[in-house]
Image (cartoon, rainbow, N blue to C red; front, side, top):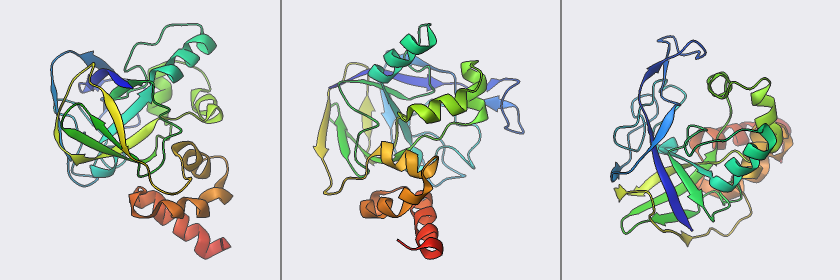
Length: 222
């Protein structure tokens, strides 16, 4: 298991974003130099957990519980075959492109050590948006991405430090439940009755997702 690339995005003006300022940082490209990783601060204030990476719409992106976004190279390869075109590392706006890790199959609360220092914790699934669709230039992209059910994972920073492409990735903790990123994604999108199951992940679950699940239980029961 290793980190194929570390990908950073710069603020870029585009026509397809719903950001009132008309800019996005979704176009991320691999860098070869070491990158500092640290908790960026709460949602709305903090942006990316990676130094030099732009997060432009902070009311919906970034912050401590979505500090880092990871995508498996294996899933990008699968999409290459389906779309009939090549997809570079970072093509989905991910900060980390991994090899040998079932990212969407990771458990909420699972912890990864990357290189000698950094420890990250899985918090939730990535939900596709209109900016993502515009970036991909694929019709019905949000629906297609949702149907695929391999969204990649958001992570929070447990231990800061530096990472770089080629670093080994080790799973250092797996919690004792069955709530995967893929299950969380389905519960948040196409299968809302699954939401009560997410609560088994406890405090590791992204706080907003936890609140949605609690609200569902209060309204509908477990």
